[in-house]
Image (cartoon, rainbow, N blue to C red; front, side):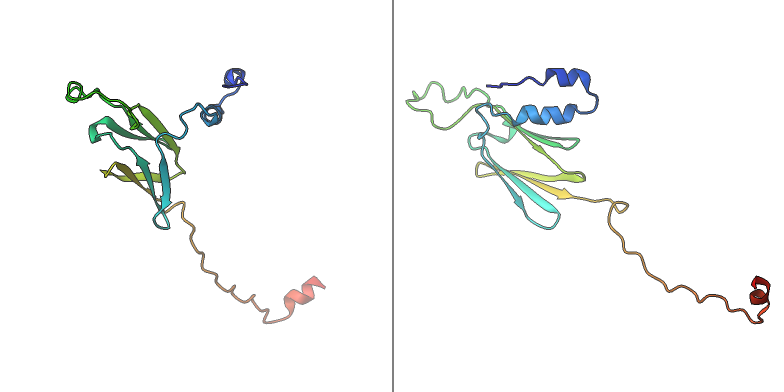
Length: 158
């Protein structure tokens, strides 16, 4: 249940819509824990997001990377083959649709996605362009100041 309304801010600000969208998503809506996920750092510039999607097949999942957001969606299709065989007495395995969004840092791209044993693995890599990488600048010694051969410049200054 939300106790505040951000609508007036949408009308009177320009360019802050992403900030307010993040605030909207931060409010709990009861499904914040589904599906569970892990975020791992697998290297200096590589990461892996693992989402538990047991019961979902590959064609029921979609992964979209747009701007700085990675969105993983799962929509369960009706299982017509299993309906006439058995009556379900207790349904503990979730079969509801979900959408999980992750904010990505700049220059993070999706490299690979795989589904194995009910876990969806999404591999991410931060690829910083050469222009943005820090570079070392060589320090050179300054050339010695020119020396005055005859003292005419000193005499003219005096």
